[in-house]
Image (cartoon, rainbow, N blue to C red; front, side, top):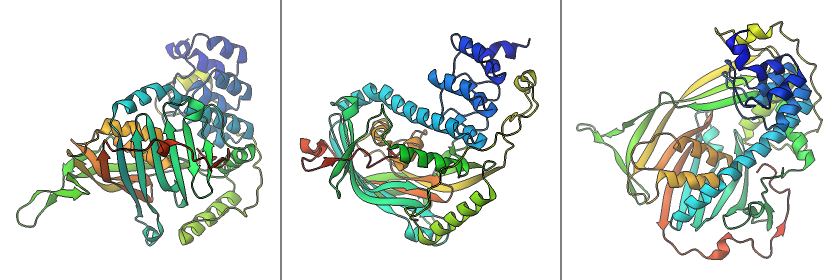
Length: 438
């Protein structure tokens, strides 16, 4: 028996569909362990279509977001395999784990917020695209953030943004560190005068909305996109014709040094082996409609629940061959229909040493507002090792066709903020399904 076979005993039990062995190995082996291909036991169970083992691993909190060496999560592999029950189980567990992860970080986050002074801050978002005419129809937004003690309020008109689809509104996001977890996160719809408490311990959407999300996953490309940080460097931007000098610029009230960000790449990988010709035709028509109008209305779309796909033919690969195959990644699921792209982005960042907030403090604030997808992108980008100062203006890629320019155009430290800013107005009523995606 090879060393790999001993080391990956739990993986072997999964690979061979030995439920009793898996149950026994779970007592002594890490359910999140990766093998030489980066696959966790859950990856293998999904790829092989062993539904009982999938449920057993999920009951032991097997991680759903973790990626293998090719950048695919167990959920991505489940979509490829096409079993609706498995996709639903993994999606529910992923949502639960995401909420639990936030709650784990909650005490440290509240402590960090309490140590910061009170402030008011404005962030301007400008979206742009290299696609002709698209930039003219893209949204912009000014987010207003009030912070007092461990409380944060964010006001925005951009409710959701995803690729070429967005939703406008007038909402406020409230975080109260003093309240218990189930009462600490609230979203207000200021036009409809309703609110929703975001409870991390439960799924906040209706069953119909959840099933619709499963339908979308099963009928769309499997996409993995990430910003490559391996080759990123920063160089001072230059100005002047005859006498070149380092470029500086006033960003709002802040003097900033301008840097060019080199080596920014958005790596995108798409899979569609689970899609039919009809799916591809519908998706193409949908994309063309969005490109023409800048938005699309799905309210009148016909609702049909996707059925599970027939299982793929199992490749004749033995466990020993799989676990000792070091030359390249061995794929054991549905044959891949795969495309990848790597797009270079020209970006700049303005760093100011005059800004009264540290990057670490900014990350703590963004941690609170991370349920907004575009803020999560900003948080992830700011985690890079930036030049000295605070990024008062920065370009970040959102999707392969879109970038966002974020400007910190106003900041006021130690301001007086009324307590009622962080309270639900008395004339607002509760609507627990108003924001199903949060």
